[in-house]
Image (cartoon, rainbow, N blue to C red; front, side, top):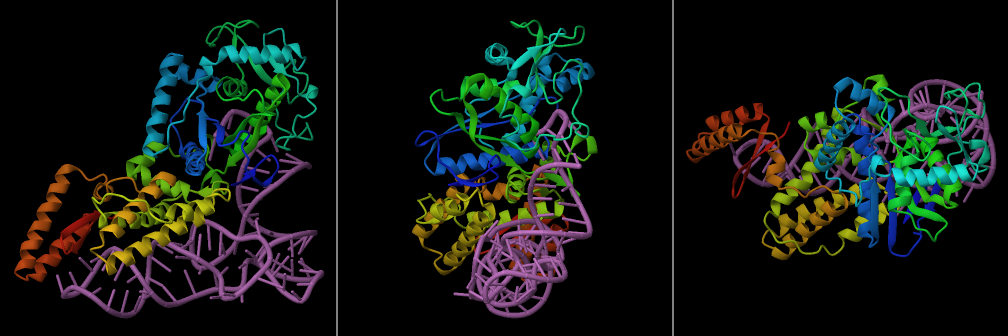
Amino acid sequence: MVLFDSHRGEKVKFEPLKPDEVRIYVCGPTVYDDAHLGHARSSLTFDLLRRVLEAEGYRVKFVKNFTDIDDKIIKKMGETGESLEELTQRYIDSYLRDMGALKVKRPDIEPRATATLPEMFKLISALLEKGFAYQLPNGDIYFDTSKDPEYCQLSHKCPQDEGVARVEHTAGKRNPADFALWKGCKGEGDVCFDSPFGAGRPGWHIECSAMIWKHLAYSDTPYQIDIHGGGADLFFPHHENEEAQTFCGTGQHLAKYWLHNGFVKIDGEKMSKSLGNSFFVKDALKSYPGEVLRFYLLSTHYRAPLNFNEEDLLSAKRRLDRLYRLKKRVYGVKPEPHPTLKGELLEPLRDDLNISKGLAVVDQFIKESNEKLTQNPKDKRLKRQIAGGIEIIDQIIGVGGEDPYRYFQWGIPQETKAKIEELIARRLEAKKVKDWTTADQIREQLREMGIQIQDTPTGTIWEKVE
RNA sequence: GGCGCCAUAGCCAAGUGGCUAAGGCAGGGGCCUGCAAAGCCCUGAUCCCCGGUUCGAAUCCGGGUGGCGCCUCCA
């Protein structure tokens, strides 16, 4: 397996710290709002990575956090009147619901920042003792970037010219790049926790280092974990700072490999709240099945930007439709391992998750299967192997696992289904007496409802096509 | 100002020195069908521009143009 390591800036051979096991940590969301498409893309990227590693035979330990204490959460509390617990739980539930709809496998552990305070204290204490951190009279504790000779070596992105860099200048900070490990309690309206350093709350970066240390880190290797992932915008300062804290505090580097996924864009620009162009996953799910959204977001290589638009989404849906039409042709058949597909699919994915080639393999499988089924419609073994192939695709790519009839009838209310069935029955009557005019009229009527029908040897079936 | 990414057919998108530049969507033609749909077959690009390296470049180097990202909360 080869992966693009952002730190080294090139594809490198993946060799886990310990044989047969891979430990992955992915930066999860700060839960102050619903998940947008960018969250979805990040989740899907690392879900694919996990599935590929598992298919390769690795035992994968996968941790993804919820940051449940933060300025933005406190601000939102002020707007909704909810408690910290109520608000964050609500958005955690929402996030899990959305990712579930996208068929993202649940992480093995989903730690929360507020449940990891003791480890934060341990890390901050170590940094204070070793002189890598200092506390201001207002209670804030900062990491002293000037004390860390390796600061900026991870991302290579640190601002050279302080005059131009848009770094927040807080009174008392020794260096502009110094970042808060702990924020002293600011009194009324603030959310504060007791700590050995006085009441306050964690800074933004500390939770990830603490959670990795608590839940995932090896203690006997130069790196705590194998892979650390997240969106490209987290490389600096977030990941740089995590690495600095962990390395200075524990003597171990944080991760052997750093992976970053590209952005979702709208009209060529990064999707973001401030531009007012973000799309919530839950809204996209109103118009499209989760699997379609999954397939679309996954079909562009994870490091390339993905310019979100409905036309491309529809194009991706049509591509996925073909898999489900094939699945109809082997409906109800007991799957049997496909002789070659798993290896063929894994081969391109081993190369830094080359999904384009992977999907070309899927397309080829669909085409060949259709061809063979036409030639040998009674071949039970063939059908079982095709069903097995679809299972492999579901296992690795995460699509194709639904009932094909339900897939094509997604979002159709029960009463509409009844109406469709009735029209099809009427058309069948017309066909029996060779009343083609009526039959075609009914077909056209269904077409206008967005329903496309197919006459097959075993009856007429229908699909929602728009 | 610093660092970095991208530019391949109508659209999406592989390809990182060499057979006829993957695959999908859309379009056109055909087989099949009462007619359709689905499926299958056939069908399209010399790779932003200029210069260089090389026997040979979409792929390497230099310059240019255009687009984007991080350096501020951000997946």
